[in-house]
Image (cartoon, rainbow, N blue to C red; front, top):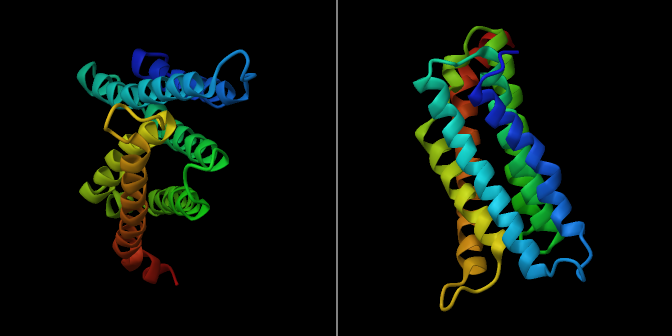
Length: 189
C-alpha cells in the first residue's frame, strides 16, 4: 500500500465515519440536536471535499495506485451508506431511498468487480449520469443532515427533493451500467 497524501486523505474519510455517526449518540445535554446536525454536516462535507481533492491530487502528483483506485470508492460508499442510515434513523429520508442508493452501490460494485475479472471493466466505467447522481446525493445529504431552516431557505425541503432525484438517477444509472455489461453477461451465459 503506497502511503501518499491522496491515500492518506482517503483513509481520513474512513476514519471520519465513526466520528460522523457517533456525534448523534452524544447526550443531548452535552450537544444539542442542532449542534449535532451542524457537526455532522461539517464532517460529511469535509469528507466529500477530500473525495474530490484526493483524486485530483493523485492525478496532479502522479500518485495514482491500484490500492488508491480500490480504496477511494470503498471510502465513498461507506460514508454515503453511513449518512443514509443516520438520516433514516433520524426520520429524514424514507427507507426506500436508502435501499435504492445502497443497493445500487452494492450491485454496481459487484458488477464492476466481475467485469474487471473478465477484462471488460471499460464497459462499466463511470458515466456522466453517474457523476450527476453523485453530485445530487452529495449536495442532498449535507442539506438533510443540517435540517434546520436558514432564514427563508429550507435545507430539509431542498435536500428531500435532491435525494429523490438522486434515487431516480441511481436507478437509471444502474440500468445503464447493466445494459452496458449485458453483452459480456450474455457471452458468459
